[in-house]
Length: 89
Image (cartoon, rainbow, N blue to C red; front, side):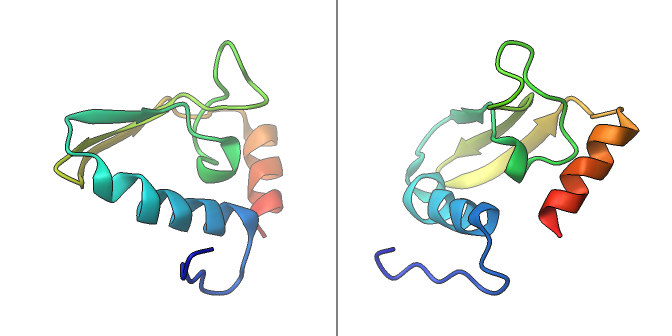
């Protein structure tokens, strides 16, 4: 998309991460928070309390296009961890 290159393996999660980096993160003069990341980008984060199938409890702080903080509620369910890692493989 628009010259964005996704190195192999070309997965949906990797492409989404590249697109956010190219079209969102570098334009956040901030301070700005990116919140509620999708599970495919946050395999170690707990599911969001209100939207468990769509988002995780994770946020990043950006100032001037630079990431200053990356935090999440740690996933402590070994079965869900295994499932998410299998989905990434």
